[in-house]
Image (tube, rainbow over all chains, first blue to last red; front, side, top):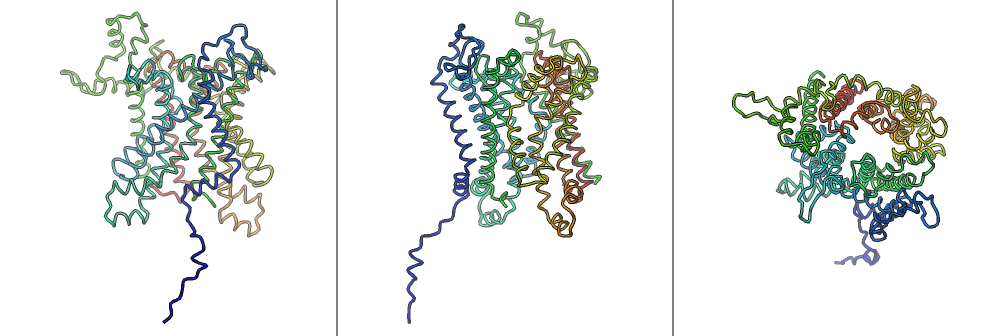
Length: 312
Length: 315
């Protein structure tokens, strides 16, 4: 009787590790120069937004009436505004408002859309009817009108006054909430459709056959397979939130009066273009253009990397 | 088919009811001290009470449980009945909403209808062109420009356009002294929307190009332009027209910023001024109007789908 010794060559060969969805997506993004460039741009905006608070802590008090409306120069790269304040500082502080609003609005909207979409898709029946009714209703009212109306209704309302979680709904906190509670619809639709699809797959049936409870299946087997969609929507949702903030601030319904933001800059400089003072409006529009472009391209690449079904 | 249409109609009624409920909650419940906002900070409690009584804001919100009254004698019932018939009156000048809409809608439509038609035609031409020459230089440049165009802020298009008009023909940069001035916002609207539309239409056309029937047609020797125009574009029209119909109600209010910049007295302008003046009935009425058009638009699209695309399942 002979025993065949295991082939040493096979033993020596490294074990081929399968790559997870996330690892695979990361590899794809890292090898994609456009995605890396856009990610760096987004990172730079975040860094500048954080840095701006430390570099210009008392920006609002820097009025200098001998330096009003100066065109761009070596001292003031982006020129000065009507109060003699540096437009570069204003633009960077505006980036801070935009990035925070983009983040906070999606931090509310995406989990909300995920939760409602999963609940509706998984439990069906009246819960699903309710979720679908809720998002069809909200989707029937043009978003910008609803936003303006909500922000208007919020005026003068301060929640939890005097506590450390004080929320001034007239200003930027109201923006987070208004944008958050109104922009979950897209995420919810996609998540609900995907949940309906996952629910009928074999592995879920197998999990049920092995005696796992409904909640356990939901948390352990369905939600993890939806997270990539939530991440994609988070990135793409940034663009909508930033644009909405600029339009609302432009209309005077966004951030508190006096807070530097791209929308208030555009509003302040709106009539200046005609007399040749272009720098403030151009700075705000250009800053917005670059971040929206980076977010759009990065979001698209992220979707391609994370959603293998879209690959050909 | 008939059952499907009836089911969609019932759903539409529920959606409209939802819109009413949301706007009612938003404008009547969340909005706070509306009497104070209209009478000014010096108003006494007595004056505020009288004001609320005059406009019916002192009634119960949803259900009237007081004795000797009808249970439906409430703010919500009143709100639904006046808003749905556009009979509601402005708190500022007491004008009936239906009259105001008839007076102002032509200005909004004068911007949005040409903008929609021109935008669609132009985007169709450009996207067919880039899709026809796919993966070539024309395609790459086209897509690149479309993405850039999508990312330019809408406000930048408006401000840039207005500035250009000031330089070229100052009399056309504001107001409607000359009726031709309306074409300035139309052109701006078309240019601002072009990038997004071209990108979407191109994806739809390319999706269709990779299908089997296109390969079969080519294998049979049908020349490429003929495949493009006779087969592909025809099959692309459904998603593209859906996209277009969905855009209609948003365009009615979407010209809000254009009307503001160019001083055009349309519905968007009315909505903005009503919001600043806290003219609650007008804001609710206009919101209801756009929602109504949207719901009817989606209903029409869904039914069109069933008629023109036999593959669509009735659910």
